[in-house]
Image (tube, rainbow, N blue to C red; front, side, top):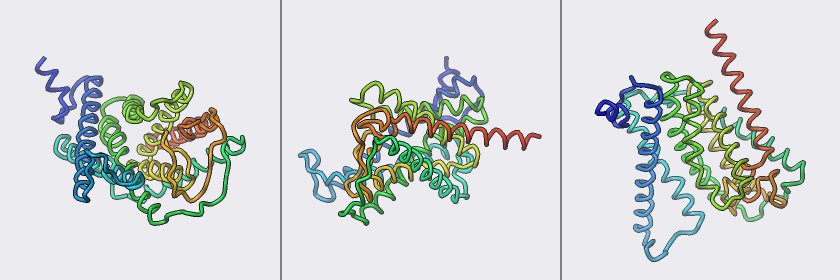
Length: 307
């Protein structure tokens, strides 16, 4: 029993154990990093509010846009906690976590994200389930730039946790499909709260979308041997969906300062209803196709290296 407790404890870097116990160990580390980072980030946000004379206990808050900025920028604390755990507990180099010097991969991922989003939105528009209502007349460019910075941090925080902490620590210890499944599980779990109040059909479609986009992130990480491409895709997808197109992002309404006015026409599985296109069956198909393509590319490259 003592040996089991020592093995499963996330506060040591032991890896010589059955695969199932190792996976549970990494999931526990994910939970600790996520919640520790979240609580510290919340504390930092409260500190900023108090320093600015806002007493949140009395309901005194900043505007919604400023609170969103604080939430996204506060996630840099989660990145810091994840890095500290990796260095102090795992005792590994950051490059083994996918944090390499090849940061140019971020822009490759960003381009892939723009392309995927464009295909998804265009396909949904053809069905008439999303309408284009012209360019916004009251766009706040400085706020959009701040939101871009926030989404860069937010996307990176989730990738450091899911792809860095979980996938990269498991990929050489368990079969690759198992490592990808573990990463996908924590990614989906992390977004589960966004489905509160959604109809079952949107939950099913949305969860499927989370699974296949998580696979895309994982295959990109494995193909490039870095998490930067996944970070770029993740951040740019979120920013463009919310701040460029003004569409709902994972159940949250798009920002009022978006560059373009686009709206869902009715609530159906073609546009994902109130949850947004990430619960659209069209987006499911497009992203699933991208995941299959990336997996084939990754397998082909591995086969060629082993030949």
